[in-house]
Amino acid sequence: MRKECIAILWLAALAGCRSSSSSDVADAAASASRPKIVRPRVAASDETPLDLAQSKLALTIVKDHVTPVAATLAFRDGAVSLDGASPTARLSVDLDSFSSDIAIRNERVRNIFFETSAIGWETAELVFSLTKELVERLRRDKKLTGVPLEGALKVHGHSSKLPVTIDAGYGDTGRIWVKSSTPVQVKVSDLDLTDNLHRLNAICMHDSIDDVVKVDVSIVFSSSAVH
Picture 1: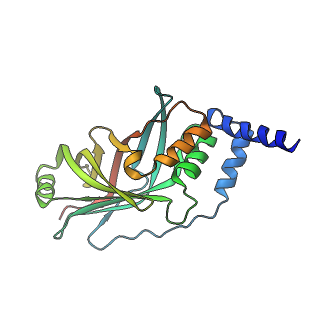
Picture 2: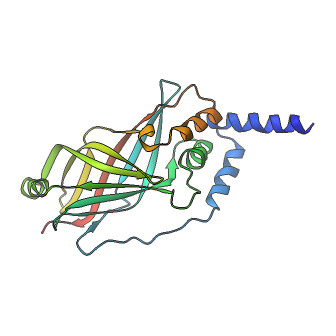
């Protein structure tokens, strides 16, 4: 009898990624009640902080070879510094904010793939080094298109280079905005998360989940960085 009960529970868990049910609500509630560390936002005197409310990050993940899954992630922090010897932009993404249209999928991506319950593993960090020539062009022309950059993406202590192509400019109020010209392609294998992807795939009973995640980014910094 005990073996039968275990088998039933296991099958119920496997089916969960395909549809939402009352158990999804319980899973979501359990995650929401988990204590989360709230880190204060920190910006240096020469940095312009990210506008968290106006900045968006959208994901597209392909499962079963042909089916796209749309999801979002929120930024936790970020800032840009255009002055000094080393202009930089830094972004911090809240991996625990992963959100799609199915609650149980959200929980499994957070817990199995991102493992956000582990201390220090609830964020992804991204840093771009900017050249002085690029900063001068932005200030002179006010708008740039198709600019190639290479960032350093860090997840779970593992770093990977991340090439992107962006458009950037100043809005009517003088605030800097940045958008991805084309979707950014993030490879799971480059971040040493392939084993986590395989576990997620097995539990959700998919034929496949692609190694490449396409990301569209639209960010705004909270005040003018023109000097």
